[in-house]
Structure formats: C-alpha cells, structure tokens
Image 1 (tube, rainbow over the protein chains, first blue to last red):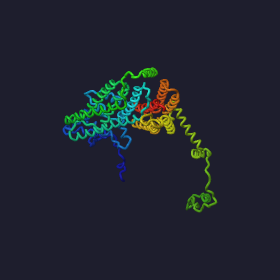
Image 2 (cartoon, one colour):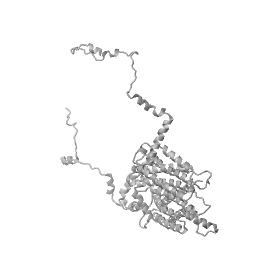
Image 3 (cartoon, chains in turn blue, red):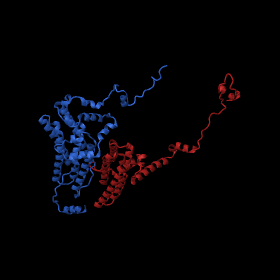
Image 4 (cartoon, one colour):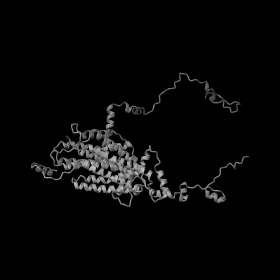
Length: 306
Length: 236
C-alpha cells in the first residue's frame, strides 16, 4: 500500500536540464570564496593599500597575500617546512647572483629578485665557497710570496679553515640578526613603509658576499696596490648593494639614525674584507735587492727551477 | 555418515533424520594419531635459508661483505649507469676509505701544533659532515634519493682520491722538486675529475632537471677541498 513509487530514488541529473524542465525552481549558487574580497569597497583598504603597496609590489595584493600565507603552512618540525627555503631553480640563483654583482640605483635587490621567494641555498653555499676560497688563496699566496726563501717550509695551515668558517658564517648570520632586530625596534617607533623579514636580510647579505669569491682568488697576486684596489672595488659593489637595499627601510626615520645605520652596515662590511685580507694573506715583500751576495744565486736558481 | 547410509532412501518418512546425527557419539581416543610432519619437496633448501647468516662461519660473513664492497669499488672505477650502488647501499666502503684517507693525511704529532696539515679528526669530520650536508642539500632541493643511498655514493666516490693519496705518498718518497709537484698535481687532477664523473653519474638522475646544477655544485666543492688537502700534504 505504501506507494513504492514515492520511495524510488529520483535522478536529479544536471542543473541545466532540471532548470529547463522546471524553470521556476529556486537555485543556490555557491561563490568561490577567493573572489569575495574583491567585492568590498576600496575605501576601508585604501589607507592600508599605500603602505602595503611598496611591500607587496604593484601586483594584486590580495592574491599575493593569500598566496604568501598559503606557502609556508607546514609546521616547523616537518621536513617540508625547510624545503620551502630551498625552492629555487638554477636560473633563479644565477639571476640573483648577477643582480648582486650589478647594483643599479633604481632597482631594489630584494624587491626585484627575492621578494617572491627568499632562499637559504645561496647564502649557505656562497659562504661555504668563500670560506674555502679565502683559506686556499691565503695559503697559495703565502707559498708564492715565500717561495725563494731558504728557511721557509711550506705548511698547509689547515687551522685557518676553521677560523675562516667561524668568521664568515658569524658575519653572514649574526649581523643580519642584529640588523633585523634593530629594524624591528625602529619600526615600532616610526612607521616605516618597507620592512624586511629576517630571511630576506640573510639572503641579501649572503648574495652580497659573492663578489668576495673572485676577489679572494685575485688576492693571490702579491702586490699591495692590486690588493687594495680589489678591496675598493669589492667594497664598492657589495656596499652599495647593501646600502641601496636598506635605505628604503630606514629613510622614514630620523635622518641621523638612518645615516648611522647605513654607515654601520658599510663599515662592518669593510671590516670583514680588510680583516680577512690582513689575517689570511701575508704582506707581500717588496722586491728588494738582497743584502748579502750569496743569496742572489740561490734565488735565481730557485726561480729557474720553479 | 554410517547412519545416513543405513537409513533407507525413502523420501516419504515422516521424520527425516538429521545428518551427522551420531557424530556426537564419536570421541577421539588417544590412539588415533593426530600429529605428523608436513613435508615440502624442497625441504633441504629452505633449511639452508633459515640459518644461513646466523650459523655460517665468520669467514663467510666477512667475505660476503668484502665482496659487496669490492663490487661497488668496481662500479666506481668504471662508472656506468647502474643501480647497484643505490640499491644495495652500505657504509662499510665509505668508512674504510675515510679512515684510510684520514690516516694518510694526518700530520705527525711531532709537527708544530700551530699550523700544519689536518688532524685525523678534522679529515674525518670534513668527509662525513660534508657528505651529510650535501645529502641534506639535495634532499631539500627536492631530490628523490634516500639519505643513506646518497651517503653511500658520496663515500664510495672518494675511492679515486684515496688512490691519488697513495700515489702521492709514493711519489713523495722520491726527491722533492717541481717535477715531483707536477706529477702529483696531474694525478690529483685526474682523480678529482674521475670522482666528480662517478658521483654525478649516480646522483644527477635523482634531481629534478631544473635544479641539477644546484645539487652537483656542492659535490664539486667537496671533492675539490679533499683534493686540495691531498695535494698540499707535506711529510715531515
């Protein structure tokens, strides 16, 4: 008696077909939640947009903010969290290195190259290469300088590798930490337009050290003038890169504080390069005439045999 | 069953007899044996697998492992595209090579502690920490090689450099001079290139193609540093 037909399962099929069958039926449309923020009027976000504009670039700031929020979502104890810091391709690393070698006043290194994707690959391996470049070049340079001397016995000076590693890695990680802390502190006092995250600062410092790798290799040349010219060139390039990167972050501040910050950054950079030059590379002797008469024969013989 | 057979095949009986009616009367006495042996035709071979690695002589165990290590050495010396190093990885070979290299590279204790060649521990740490760092790097970049497989490959590919160290030590027994240095330089360069080619042949395929250079560069740096240590070794 119970109408078996009532209990039959009904096929509803396509919405289009049911609408054509029953045009007056009510329909429910579920919107994509990603589109709803666009419908809000521009005024509540207007004041915030100017501040965020420089921060996020001139792209669609909604989308980049959503995407940036979605990117690093793994908890910090999983392996995937750390994989997000190595999410770079070969050409991206090369582009960043090229950008660090040619600082152009209009372009901000962070904004242009890194803003999408700070990585730890570049800073880590550039520092490792620099450590070994300085240690090996220092050793080679000392060997070449003292080549003719009778009393010189070559030693590989392996201990200097660990000293170089400590210096370079401390510089590349502790100075960005201090700078980031300082910028955060100033940000709490003065509203700055541009602020950098810790990873971005580490990235800038890491890539700015790249110029020192060829410089260290060229420091093998035992001429004082050549070495100091190289110091000036390297300091000019990487110092200007750092200054141009951090100037937008401090220019809203008190004039003196801003200038002092930039001056400190460049000064620390100079200390690093001059310190490495002084410690790892012996001072080249000038090519003096030897005082005794016996030694010219020996030096000539040594020069001929080498 | 006997009961079922006894009943006449008469479908017309009023009360049908249930099957297995008398089964409850059967009791298992102790006389009926219920135990036995299951024998499989290949009995002797299974017995051999059971106690193969536990009861064999120590010499067999050691020779088996040594043969595996030796086979991998051959794969390193003649690098072809094969999976042996990756499939049956072991860390004996890297350990033997690393200890040999560190023993040959360490400076004498009579040497001045101020500056000189590396100590045994320093070489050991550089080799193992370097290999671990390169492995972590390649995994973080998205490579699909396991941790120990990568350690195994990197360790085994130190073999050419160990051979270079042996040759250098022999060459250093001759009189020192620039010819001596040139011979050593040549040997170290050739072995360095061999190590790089061997390890790249095994490791490069596990990386996504747009990051291959990023994963291979640290390997290059690693073997370069070891080559430098070998080249600058000076006996007292």
